[in-house]
Image (cartoon, rainbow, N blue to C red; front, top):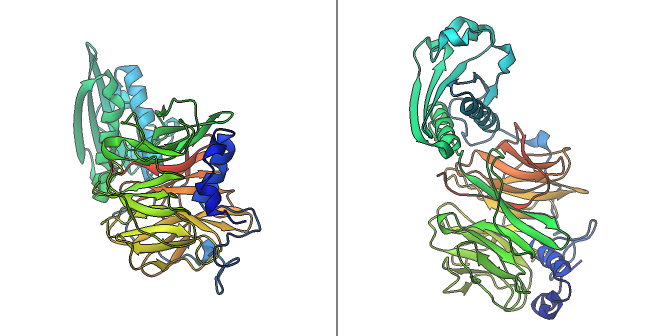
Length: 459
């Protein structure tokens, strides 16, 4: 099934008749979607000659990326309920346990197994009872609430090192600072073990249908808590992307046409004729790549973050969509069907040096570049038979890994700010997190979600 670029450019009057149907068509164009068993065509038909099947997980070799520091196996850690104010202490325990679990670094032990005398231990530990239950580490805490102000004291123990804490922190603030302070503590714990601060406090943006003919943009903390709705315009809102200062770009049919908006602005950032969508901000925040069809078929342009100084980068009769920046801003990966089926390509930031990098699979889409600079890794969605799974590819060598298989449909990968975790949506029931090897998959948010984007920074 091909999508006529002239139709994409000249469907303005149809938006007013049935914008939801047209939104579906445009989303199909953006991601080069085709009906099962059919291929996109643009100057060709079907897959390129020589394309090989997508790899199986059994083909995965060693990951050439140290994402754990010194940790290879899940570190067994105990998180007893903190001392002090009971309700606050219970909140801290739940926040800590969930964050440690989804970090893909720790195995959180069941509190029912603890045999230590917690009241006698206080903020300290007696190593023997913790060794007996298999704990390698123990987190202790205390919550004090006075006149609406909180003080949270935390200690981390490595059981093998005895009774002295290896890490201690104290946080003070208001009642609303319990979660942010606990995130800061967990990030420090992760830094202790890996040498890099954790990502808790960062958010994931996504789109979700909220009513017939209506979709909205949401954000959620990366542990699955604190879901917040961004759009409230009663229209179809698609394809979120993070912008300056925590703002969010999105395409909306609010005024009847697919224009590009930003959550901190009242008017459209881009309202060119045809499509205005699929933005991606460079890591330094100076440039935005975006998909426009003002000149005919969808092509990739670059502008400043306000949508000014537009310059076209791609110039091909095919559909060119889904731009994503390399960490240093020197390259852009994108999807094109110029060889007959949607594949991942890479070009220099000025549009030169275009080259195809995926030669396995006939239907590859939604690329997202890892923020790590030590290896040029891109995660993407590939269709294998009648389902979709998550893969990664080295943009320089072409080495490909499969991260999901025989686990339903898995799509729309998004890298964490440190490049150690990948968020994705699964037909198993919602948004999941996994590590860069595809291991330790955890459901963080039930329900439908589309086009996930992880914020590139931690507050």
